[in-house]
Image 1 (cartoon, helix red, strand yellow):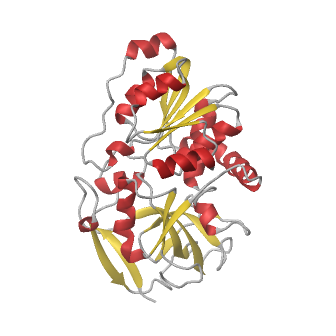
Image 2 (image 1 turned 60 degrees about the horizontal axis):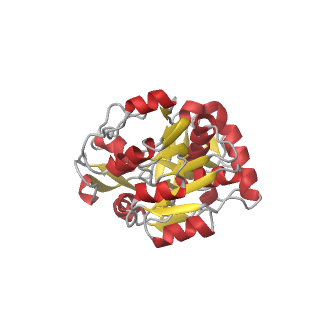
Length: 343
């Protein structure tokens, strides 16, 4: 079979679009692997905000940038169709750094993991995927949530934010979720069990927060940045914790991401902690995260939804939906049916 690819054609300087990428069909990749490598037929690609940083050329990213002319990188799950590694047999499913193409030779020792039998591919990329693990590895070690504390979450209807909200609910926090639009607010209330929801597109966030929690906020999990971070910082309680996970409000602007004006003396006097993180900073917690999330999911405690959009050829449009807020839940691109047939 041929190998469909999307290559980076130019670095985006504003909203990302199809013109940033070049579509190409290359020959079948079979028989080209080195010893120890496996050939993966990708099934699902995660559309993650951080990919925007990888293709922008930001050299301070935790991940190597995508060079012009190379396939766009993405977290991915696929099926091994050829193996030069006895520990990773043909037919097994693999998760790790993939790319916007049908097939890819990878070294599975470089941070890849096998997906257990009985776990669906969509669950492995969604409720048990890297975004859910990120939620756990940020909230638990940094936020250290306790029953009765106030947890504020921006981007609450997203794949990270919704899991953060529900972990807080499970642990007995009073949870406030910020999201845009009535459908997302309804889902957070009715399915995720969020105590209070605020529509950042239609409501006065400072006024609503002051009415809901006049006592202030103990933990703020920030997926957005910008003015919402400023609003939250002004309402943190003594010994509060601000967890910096994402800055999606600025990712697609093409501008430098800078801090909003914050009263730093208030943070000092209040003993308020601000900490950024990546899941990889807490590698030792990832097995615990996967086990705990799996148990909660089996018990029906985690509502989740995945927005799966079919077609490798439509990938630029699928990815762009991430920055317009039109997706609902974890945004995935299905590029094969799991049986080796391209989509």
